Length: 204
Image 1: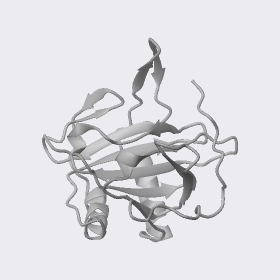
Image 2: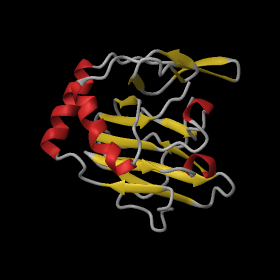
Image 3: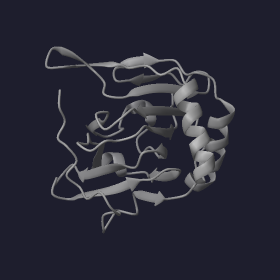
Image 4: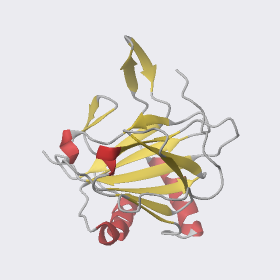
């Protein structure tokens, strides 16, 4: 299964980002600390590769995932129920950094490991009922810069792109999931490893 390759600019952020729904902060975590965390996450996390069913066929999800959180924050990752691993010191440290900026107490985090340019996530919105009606999601990136593309559900000609830099924070605010969908596309250019942490609030 092939996704459309990224068609947005590689350099800079798109003009006119819907800042009422999306906020980007580069340099949340310094480069040296980010390098250490990236290496530890890749080495130590219990990464899994899920499968997705499309058109009556099973496909491997083109990235690896790991789920951490409070007890009881079970979550469906690519259609498979995942019980959370207990928080690590590193994840708690990052969680405490982003919570004051988000104004939210997160109880879980989904980690995605993009091994190279072939790994990706297709167009989607995080609108599962377990995340609430207007979820706020804080996304922290380490490693290879990748383009985070968003487009309006009503008009695909309205689209934007943000370069997710090493140690950066992207805040997806209330209302974004309802109005927009997002992706990280495949790349024809060589890409190094990237790990992305998306902090969430899961409700029973």
